[in-house]
Figure 1 (spheres, rainbow, N blue to C red):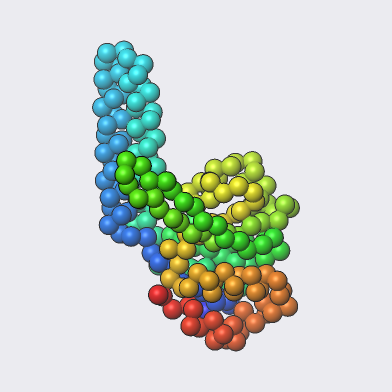
Figure 2 (figure 1 turned 120 degrees about the horizontal axis):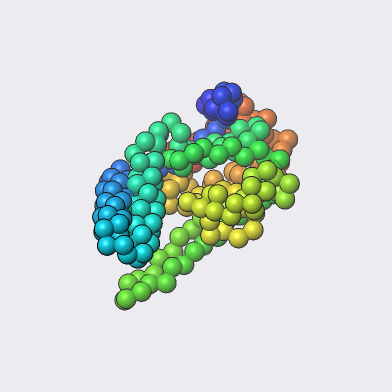
Length: 213
């Protein structure tokens, strides 16, 4: 298939990514508007009564509302054509429904995976999330930017230590996460085989994994 990288169309293969849940996105928008409205009310009361706590409440609620609102709008506006983990001869392009990120193979140090376990509270069962990581080289511009702005990629990788520049929750992948992991590692460790990503050979080899589960 043809993949767009900074306006240049190139051949490659795509592993499917599930689109963001539309009901969840709508819920986030509604919640965001609610928080912003509460923040506005707190600001009005603070100005009327001269209470500093009202200003603090406005800042907290407005900030929280903005995060929910922007996340929901991004989910609603995301294009299915931008969803996927794309492998080309020169780049790995990751689109999870927000901004697509193109990472040159030369800037990738390794492909890794990790698991997060969230402890349950108030009798609720804890949860486990599995993540697929693309770790950058020390000289990668993305790594340098991440070090300068630790929460630059906070939506996806703010919790990741080290030099991970991309973190994909495996639950979002529409292809077998194990296959995606091994495909990334395969072409990272065998640069001479990346040329096949321009032909139908690679697509045929991974065809079973590119179909949504």
